[in-house]
Image (cartoon, rainbow, N blue to C red; front, side, top):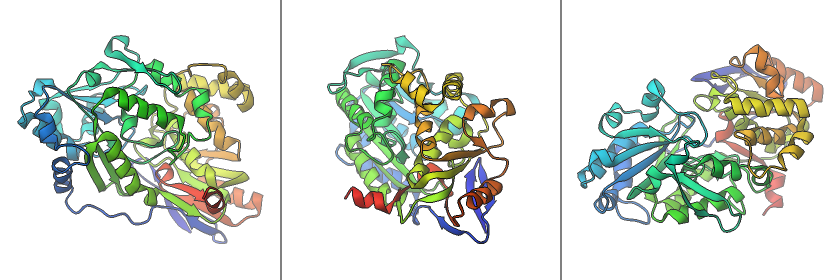
Length: 433
């Protein structure tokens, strides 16, 4: 029977053997806002936990709006211009308004890619648009240390020194921080590499609470909340989109409250309980833009591992149109390939600061410890396939058929949207309630 996985800018058609019993795991039908522009206007004019954007801007002489980088399909083109127009109308000069791309330690977004990210040429014509550079010491200020874990917090000075600080983004499951958006846009999005490599070190990443859809005792989330408190007043515009990338939810308000409201909205759509684990799990890396690199593909593996039976096969399709990812990530993957998982984890456990992008390799070891991971991709060069440290499949269909035959188990789970949907086994949910 045919199914479709998100793949690149389209879909990958796959076939499951006819004798299989398929559990397709996807979001329940989400509401779609009938008039996205009107919904954004309403959010900006009737916020949660603070004054309207116009009132806030009336007290400011400068503003910084942080946006996510190209790895997130945030509908920036819908809301940036209305936000900026309100800020300008309230008296803030356009020369004092900055749109800051919260890259974390990702590469900068430039040229056509930046235009695509903004989604509105008017924005770049009227205000300054710049990329955060986590390695640039001069662009950061020390704002304090977290109390619980003593993380040194250094943030982009353009955000810290702005009178009006706004973060924007997409609220979705995140495999380390529970959910994306809100406070996460600040750290790691606008943080110096010292801060990022501290709270992405082995100690943080190995904490069982640092997982998808969880805030309870999550060390990343706790540090992010402390960082938010250091900054004083910060505001957020949060969005939620459906499978077709249509706007389902938008709000604006005080950062913590507005983010909590957005998470509350999205939870029933992306946390899906299934009755069993599966020996064969088929998923994606969510398609473009998340599946541009193998680095980001690991999120899809981790999201699906909750329902992978021990010794089972996790099959993931990801275009990886830009290949592996950063040179630092490639180096980390080489270490994993040479050392194997146990030795690699023992090695990085000694480090107070993670090497750049090493945390993604550490996260990959989690699904690998449960079963076999198989990758289908037409973007990984032949000479780099070994660096994935997983089996590289020539066909998703063949990988499914071989898994079903190997395990003599006809039950197959298919997760078309990848890490935007996080399945949980009913047994595990019952054990935690």
